[in-house]
Length: 115
Picture: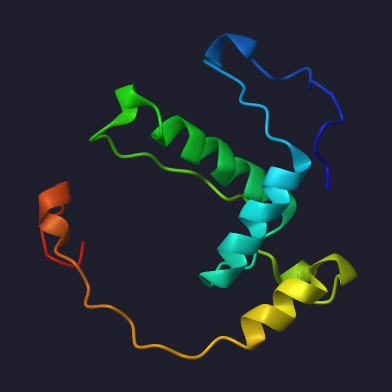
């Protein structure tokens, strides 16, 4: 899935990187599965990104702060990949539920309640 190759592009400026968080492949797969179950079909690399973000958010110094994890691609390419068959079957078996009421974004600095 493109993880762990150890390649460093020549254009990468290592001075702008604060930290690299290693994520085990099994943990990345587990997170990808969890993301599928909440409606975000993504690949294992996205699972690794979100797993690392969750680790950062769990730190005491992150309490009360907002974090953003950028998932660089959507998982449409994985809909037919055998590795995701069990996740897909489980997701297809979920019961539909109504969406929650939208929350007020003005507390996050937006000018209107819906951003």
